[in-house]
Image (tube, rainbow, N blue to C red; front, side):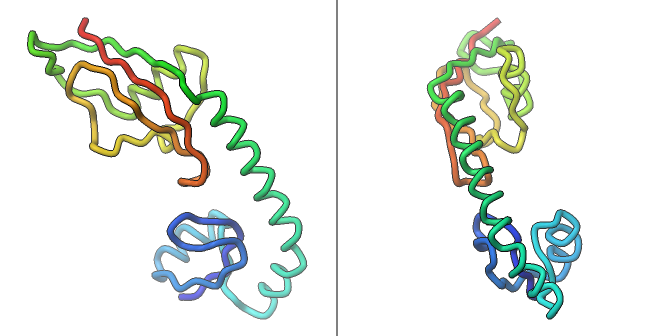
Length: 149
């Protein structure tokens, strides 16, 4: 199935690209989320008329994401968790725990913006992690400290 993208989507394409996707992905995600349109004559005409507006909106979203990234850059978040004598946690620290820790400090982030490249954290320690905004276009590094309760 071919789709005209109405915004940049990481690992798929840029605004205005005609891409081939699996039918389910196009019908169930891209079209309902208004991220893409089937390439009919009417839709191509509609896209060309709105292209400048869509590009301006994308540029504005990128600027907002960069501004957000600056506020999170270099933050240090601490989470206290139950741990054994050797520093191994009883359970783990996952993305939703990190979101809660940010909320406690007055910062609002979405769970989808938290990246844990090696999965949930299971040891006490200090970790350098990243938040990703707008897919993978903008990122901010922060420090997560897990302490034993």
